[in-house]
Length: 412
Image (cartoon, rainbow, N blue to C red; front, top):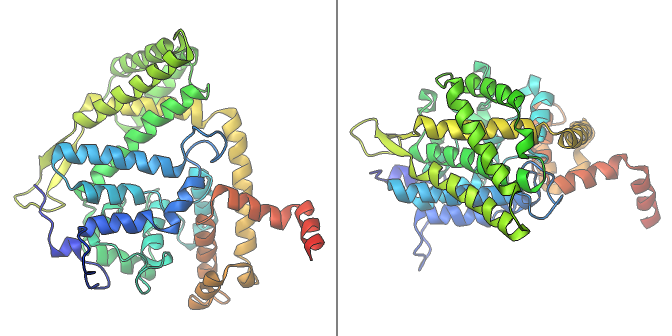
């Protein structure tokens, strides 16, 4: 099994062990992540529904906790360090901007000529620079934890949708994490957390969709089946229409069974049983494939059986059509796009330095944002990405709501 050594435990800045601290290096990483302000902000960042819209819907924080639990369950089965998996899983969305993937998409468009914006890459900026713990190296986490977060080891210039930034500042961090990152190899811990993320998305969005009335058996029509088959085929071409159809209608029957529950309590139990059974399927059926004779983080590949992968893909395709493309969610998404664009307009302006909090004013000077247009744009994206949904809305109102302006003058 994986043997971890000094290279995996190494931190960018060497630290002396604290007397009496019995935690492992990976437990220390996990605790630093949990106590970071960026992690706390995940409680008010969108997963699918707006954070705070209804109290049972998932946020980035609850999603991250669920990904950590699923990752640990897989780690226990396969013999992979569960503290390391937990640390990676808890931090895997820590760089995500407000308003879910909508915020990421808009920031990427706005920075199109300046290196783009990618939430996974921004994880590294948050953990290795913006969060403050040790010197100027952020939380000073171990190499193994940071490497577990690098899902996409390719530059944006390679015309990839998911990417690393091409600039020297960012690649300095990446080169320290994995000097051979251009081989595009992923650690086994990264592979496990990525699968756990896919599982959490598909299963828990199913639960939220049923509870929110967006997923009903009657909505799973023959027309939707055709759309789902096309989406699945675009991702993985090996599955037949008959295989997709079988899983599609089994999901429909499960939803119908929940809808036929005789009471609210029974409905709740059936939903929980469905999600529990799905997670069990996605966890217990994975295995490891040995790639070489070493016992390093790169010596294994996670194996997901075809039928298990297909079930996950079908779930996500259904949810994409019935939840993510729901009319009301699309309306909210348009508002969120507008908020992010207007905030970027404010904070990327050449005269905006004093509008930032004091630490960002220091970054402004550090990166010469008054004179370097690209750095000013990048800094604006960092600041906006750190906002919660509610803080982004509040900040937008402070600049663009006339009533807020009146209130400000009243206070003065």
